[in-house]
Length: 326
Ligand code: XMP
Image 1 (spheres, rainbow, N blue to C red):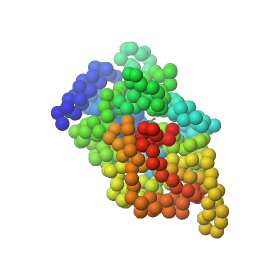
Image 2: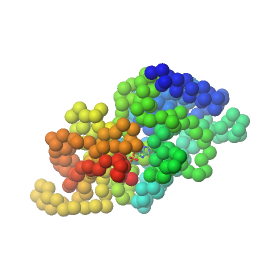
Image 3: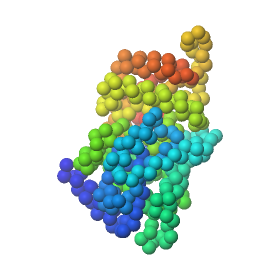
Image 4: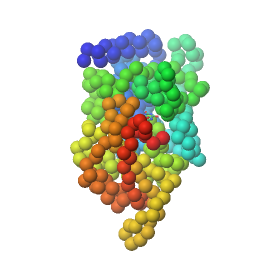
């Protein structure tokens, strides 16, 4: 529409003025927000933009390969960083949700600082057109929930807002900071991004790390990754991807319950399905999934994922719940 084109033109002008003849890196997650932000900045400064995708070890099954494949065609320079050791090391012993978010936000910035130096060299003289610019796909709701809006309190620190470290040296470029997701999708379509990118369900920057209730370990990530892959596969097979806003799968890693599987007793963990419908993620309703779909997901997860012996469904709206559990 006319308004969406206007937003793009306005942002392109503003970014040109901000960056001058400088260069920027973009934090690309694979999701629609950062993809649209990157596309706008690319319009403004062309190949002086380099996109960086960080695999922090908490991505979903097959995600890194898929992002590499889908994005390499759209953004010519895509720098893929394997930072799993770094992130998971920093998260050792961390159980508090806000602390997790802060650690993850900080490690993201450290990774982008290293990428900046690798791609463009050291920033020698800040203020002389040699500033380090970082493009983020921050949306209006991210700012509000992190306590950045007028009269709002901090609900959770989104990794790219409230989770940023205090000693941030990047100058941020956030062309979507005033927009909601449906508007971002409209801009994405205007810019001609592939519809698989534009209509992808939201996935939080901190990834599966905030869907493991308890400490994040490699083993727990493997368990959750498998359960999540099954749930997503069945949702897609049921043709419900566009009806459901998103469906986190949450691993209650510190909870165990007694089950009976195969020949005997098990003492495993529950997972929670969290299907929601929403307009903009500010509020959400729990989604009434078809019973046969829930049954297939439950049967497959308990059969195929060792360590999980119970599947539950979260029937809380937002408010009073939030979409993610942490
Ligand atoms: P909540 O859990 O606050 O989530 O109801 C609202 C929407 O935001 C996503 N979310 C995040 N996205 N970084 C992100 O990029 C974050 O730190 C973050 N936390 C939550 C969540 O998946 C939902 O779509």
